[in-house]
Image 1 (tube, rainbow, N blue to C red):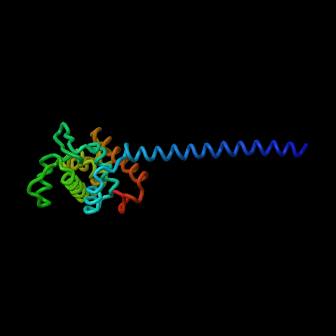
Image 2 (cartoon, rainbow, N blue to C red; image 1 turned 120 degrees about the vertical axis):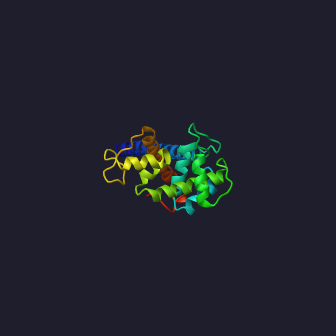
Length: 201
């Protein structure tokens, strides 16, 4: 009787273990496929060589630059916004002229990926030195230096004149949130493959 009971118990245990193992492998495969799909389609590494080159040159996290490009243009080098911002990192012609003057570039095409990423990284670095707060610098990339400077002088938006406690433009608030969300996703999906610098600060 005992032998029969033990045999039945072992069979049940074996079935349970088999089901658990199958479920584990299904979850493992689904997660692996999701990560591959996310890397390839949702958070790609477009223009990888240029991003690595200029992110490193200006001391920016590579994942952060990819996040900006994804948010700004979706990796479309020919993108042009209603406000006239051009290319991968959506740079206006007047901003492009300013950057060209600072970097010693005589002729430039903002639809050229190499030029656009170079200029975009330069401008982010410039804004980061212009504003003490990383979020304020990022808001300035979207809304302009003038607007952010005014917000920092307004007690309604800043307590200390350095950091923003509130961004009054809804578009800019959402923009900053999207950048940081994508930044986090890139770091999670690619890890050390991307970054020497892990934080935008």
